[in-house]
Image 1 (tube, rainbow, N blue to C red):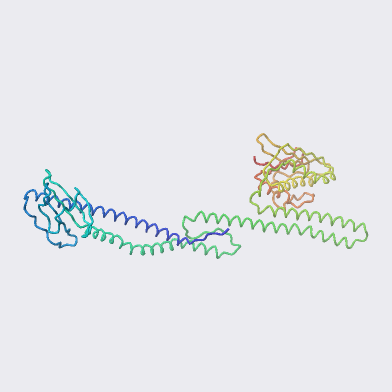
Image 2 (cartoon, helix red, strand yellow):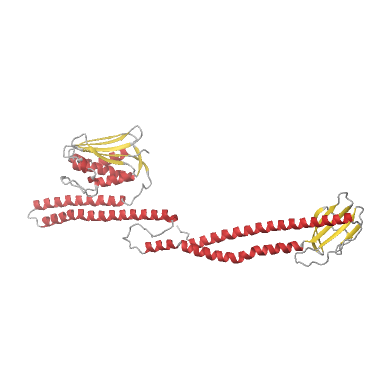
Length: 446
């Protein structure tokens, strides 16, 4: 899976500048439209006021020509043209720049385009509708004023946006500098340095990421420590059987007769069996340790697994003359990994066989309660384990010193690990077959 990498600084810079630019453009557009409307309203009001003034003068001195206003002396001074008409269509008065024909046919405000430009008109009658005044002004003045307003709005943006971009770039670079420090701190560490990352200063936004990273480092440290401890324990445990095998081989090579050589070879075979069992259990633990969940969980019948395991170990049960009983409730189904559950049941039954004396009793029960919770228990009449020692024997390579049964001290550790992976509870209790032991695994409801 390819990872899409991107620069956080560039993304922040683009988002901030983009947002500011869009906001600025939106503000400029709104200001321009609003200013345009206000200018139009102002000029229209003045145009109407001019018309009303001319109408008042014309009504008072009807027939007297109104003097032309002359040329404009200010850049924003309006150049007007006007006409005064009688009701019968006779032109009474007009400005020098006004034509003989009506400026507009509409009452109120209107606009026309001609060879002399774009004009805004206002037409109004007097109260008794005997006189009409029409006033016009060139729209170019309004456009010029609006253009100056727009330029005043754009000019600050031309200088302000680059300065703001520089400031945002400096701010983001300064604000994200602590991330570079954390990256350098992690990159400079040796592989064995798994202590938590504790920067002198860091933004609170990356605190969840640092906590997750420190949690991962703790888990890795715990896993490596477990691997180191397992390797050391395995080396220690293998040293003893290998030394014994070498001694038995030397005895067999120096045997004085066939009987002595056969005894030595028999001891050598027993030692090889124990070493093979130890290696097999260590491989099982090594395979279970990295797992953090169940791969492809499926419905598993505990009764069928228990019957198959007991059939495999049947020759050992017969050789030790054990009173063995298996009771499996029908349809005791759990969700899990069948091979791992077989390993769990085999270790429970194998432990019971190893520690139960000859002619002793072993009972395997697969039960299911009313809530549908399944439980497998193996009860024996062996020496048992004192309550204060039961948590101790769950550790790897840990065996009680007084025991004489062959074993590696890994069986219950394997059962514990498989139970954890299946979210089941493993417990050791007193056996009704005193003084034995009852080992139980209670699974969660499906």
